[in-house]
Image 1 (tube, rainbow, N blue to C red):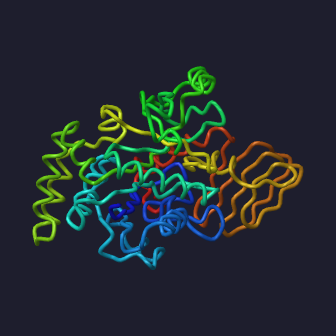
Image 2: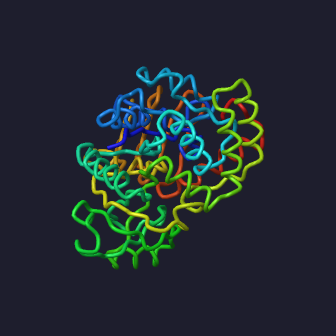
Image 3: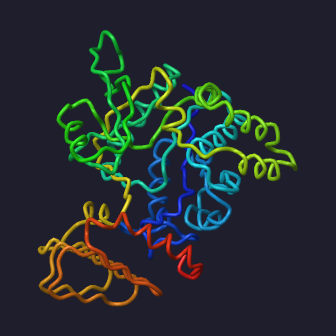
Length: 362
C-alpha cells in the first residue's frame, strides 16, 4: 500500500467563536475541551496512523507561528502557508502539489483542524478503511456522519444502498454517493433523517494525490491552470511571488461544490464516533458536560438559580442569578452575552467590528 499523508486545513478565522477566537488565535488554536487545543487533538489523532514527518498543515502566514508553538513535533517545512484564503478547493489542490513532489503515488487524508471526535479508536478504524478503499479503487472517498437529529447547520450526503455483490466495500461501511445536499431547512432535514439514506457531510476526505488533481483538472480547469503555474515554481526562488500572484487571481470555491458534487464514483463511509464540527457556541454547549442544572461551565463561575446556560470564564469570575438559556463568554477585553440558539449570529458582531475598524477586538 502507498504511503499515507495527512493534511490539516487550519486557515479559518473562527468568527462565530468571538470573543475567545481572534484573527491571530482563532478557534482551532483554543483549548475549549480540556487541555489540548482543537488542532492539537486533530494532529494527535493523525499521529496514530501517520508519522509526524508526513503530516502537513495548510494555514496562513499570520497563524504559522502559533502552529509551530502548539505542534512541537511538526516540521516547519510541513507548514504550507496560503497568501490569502480561497476556500477548500485551492487549499487542497495546493497541498496535493506539495505531496506529489515528494511521493506521486501518495494517499491523502484531508481533515479540518477544528473537529471534535469523542471515540478516537472508532474514528481511526474508519480512517484506515477509507485509506484502503481510496488506495485500491482510486476513487474519491469521504466520511459521512450518522445523523442523530434533523440538523439544519450541516450539509448532507445521500448514499446508494447496495449489497455486497455489487459493492465489495459495503462490509467496510462504504457506499456509493448518490448526491450532495446543501444545508436544508427543518422540514427537509426531518425528511432526510426519516429516509435513512442521508448522512451529515463531515468535510473529511481521503484520496490518491493524482486522483484529486485529475478531478480538479476535469471539474475546475481554471483552478488547475493556476495550480500548474504554482507547481512549476515549487522549490524555486520565485515560489512565493508566483503563489501570491496566482492566489489573488483564482476564484475561491469549496471542494464539495467544485469537485465532489460533480465527480463520479464517489464513496462515503458511515461514521459513528461522536463527531462535531464545533461550529458555534451553541454546539459547544450541546457537546459539553453539564451540572445538575444543565449548565455547561468553564473557569471561575458562580451560577445560582440558573439553568441551561453556557458560562465560559477566561480570567474573571462570572456570576449569574435567575437566568436561563444564555451564552456568556468572558475574555480580558470583551464579554459576549446572547440567547442560546442565536450564537450563529456572533459572526455579525465580528463583521460590525471590522466595519468600524476596531482592530484591537479582532
